Image (cartoon, helix red, strand yellow):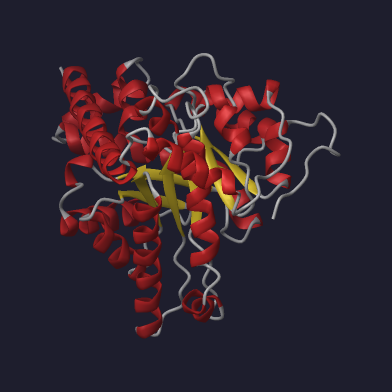
Length: 364
């Protein structure tokens, strides 16, 4: 159902996004923005209601300044290796962020106010190690509004089910097409059903993160009418499936016991093409009941120069036309989705190794 935005004046477009039913989150965290209060000001001024992180974000944050140096040396004096040191650093930042977002988490009854921490990307193909790491990290943080990010790889799916069943909130990452997204939703629902079978409430929260702009970087050779449109079409196709999967009898039985849908989260919504407006993907993917996590340039681009006109209409025939058009020009969407997931995993692994190398150098 489309929701009009034209009758609302020039209020901050990020605040308008909230009114239209989509949660604006920030896809970045640094210790500096915690220490100087800028994250708190962004929450108050732009109305962001959550935050995500990943190994690349922490690689840049830790490697580019001196804010973490004292803690790195303290960890070294305790005998922690680089891997353990990273989680010591990350948990301090993200627990502080969780505390900033906690009033939003409480006010929304646990719908919003979430912060995300990713397990080591080296575990992406190891189901049991992913479960063990996620359980340990969530317990160590001790925050009700911390998501543990788990990749939606084939090995990640059974980990998602087990974590949901054990009550660990999960942000499923590295999803690219409808098939990967649907498999994630079914893993989530299965985890909730296991909780019910065990006599527990099906109340574990989750989001499923579908990456958008990487599609358009990989299909930049398409003709003008299709260029920079595949990512949006894939995101909209996933939204159509989101509505279907959470409106059937299977989930209705869980909803009656208090379960909530696993919200669809649009990730990688910063533009790769410099010719596009910074808020290009955000404006195109406005949809109620979802999340959009934005890098800071997209967030401020939306706040300062964006124009939200309406939520897109589900079931729009143009969505299927774009995807069919891409296939007609030789793009194997299913094969490319798997390739993008593998490349995304490998990029995070590369960032992870660079991050640990940076920590090691700071250890002296």
